[in-house]
Image 1 (tube, one colour):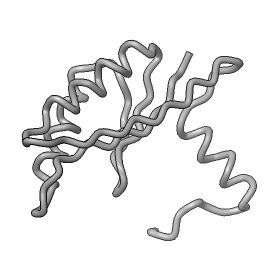
Image 2 (tube, rainbow, N blue to C red; image 1 turned 45 degrees about the horizontal axis):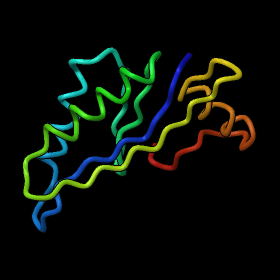
Image 3 (cartoon, rainbow, N blue to C red; image 1 turned 90 degrees about the horizontal axis):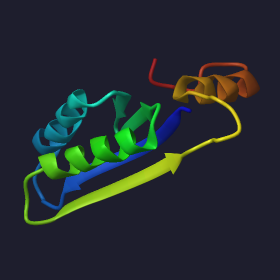
Length: 103
């Protein structure tokens, strides 16, 4: 089973969060997950929901601060195997073009 999630971890501070966010992303390296960081969070894929939760917890704990905000949105499609890239490809098929304007 592939579990796909969107993880957002950030300290509640007024200055730049990039250093603390980098710590959260770096913490994912210790787990058997694939991930891709984007401007709004990090998409994580794992074969096991327990591994996903462990990675998310490690990312949360890696951030320093008096207050840390973490959002974890999980898509656990149990009827068939699907990946994050397949989800994007399905949207692009419907659009008939890439689903980005950054390129």
